[in-house]
Length: 276
Length: 171
Image (cartoon, rainbow over all chains, first blue to last red):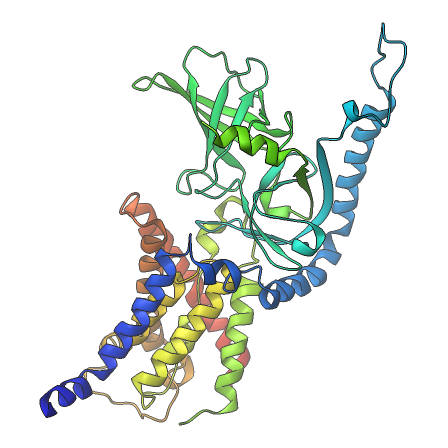
């Protein structure tokens, strides 16, 4: 017994080191399904997010002009859509306030208070949480295109998994041919303004500067929001698919404003998606 | 326990500098080469008579706090603990027999610029190399990772030299 105590005493530093290291590695490898991680130890907890918010308040002052211009451009685009509405021919009465015209998607304006763009697994933080109706698996879009999906919420802040994260996955459409593809961001080969699209058949005609849009299949984003434009197309002869490099519409190093997308028929859609 | 207020200030200050200054730097497409992690400086600069127990405890909490802010739980913690535990081994690079006083902090002005570059360079390079490997969790693109950690180490060393000239330098 005495020898054991002496042994422990001799190697107490190493044992203590091992103990702490195992805790750290446990945190690291269980971070995807760890209760503590998602509820207390993530960057959208109250303390760290409010510090990020303070930093945002200080630094955003210097880019107010650019934000303003961005919003003005978007406003003009929306006004164009609204005032130049296509005429409806052959329909005598338009019914409003009817169940047939129920709104499908709702948007809420938020601010992106912290955006990572140079790491391996990047994350964004926005300034609204469960108290303003944000919940898991809602989409976030910017003024030009899509940004990411909500992965974690607290009372006043939420964490977003952006497109530029290797864990992100979404189905997108080629606008001209309606071909389906999968988004994939590879940290070693991409930087913060491009992304790969895989699994598009080799016979599809994809040219440079073609648009890719969201498909609306998962019910996270409405159909037709821009993702990016084609930068380079290469062929994968073994799999008979195209490997497309896309230039993203949004610049992830200069994010400021965004819109949370809420789908009012998400529950109904999930019922059909899960029922197989 | 030699817990003086300067150490506490350094602890909070290095977290602040790492999160709100270095992580916020924007170098465009090359910014992944300019994202050094300098928090191991706090652990490495501690006096030689600090016990391993204190060193490991500080390293653990420093790593956890940085990880919470960067949303990468456990990644920095695991590596900074290893660096803290291997600190005596790294010290062999600059002295075979311990010829400096145990009461002194290991900063640039106390141990000299050459020793500083050797000791901190080796340990911070070790930190970055392990960090990128553990983050990616494979040996793919090993040479680009090697280059990345080398450049990040140089940037970190430059940054630390500036930091010490600002906060430690006395005439």
